Image 1 (tube, helix red, strand yellow):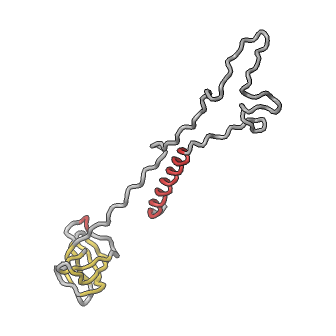
Image 2 (cartoon, rainbow, N blue to C red):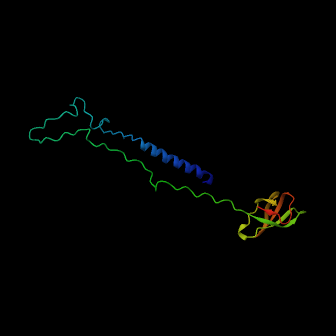
Image 3 (spheres, rainbow, N blue to C red):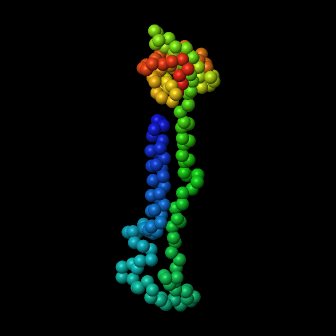
Length: 170
């Protein structure tokens, strides 16, 4: 998967979570159905008595308390709260690009190449990297790193500009 798609996927996951929360806040009761025609179980059957009409107990039976529908607790669906386990954490942002800094140690204008001293072995850019060359903070040219690279030094072709020994490369 390309890393360029990760922010888009994270945004889509967040949008889906917010949609679930909004739907849960609407408190829409679920539709109940039975196997016999989809009528609600408390709905009166055709031709039957009114559901709140008291029934006479048959002889020998003990009278049962009539259930008042207003006193019957109505099941409320649980609020859909996103669980911490269900949410995937956002990926780590990519590290900032390395800050390559060096100086022009040697210069050959006939062959149009330079040797750059990057001062630290771990601070040498890869081959084919293009860097700017500055003198007193002002851009004076550009270079492209070429083989051989022997940290902390690297050779580079001069792409443009007029360079001098001691110019800053970054």
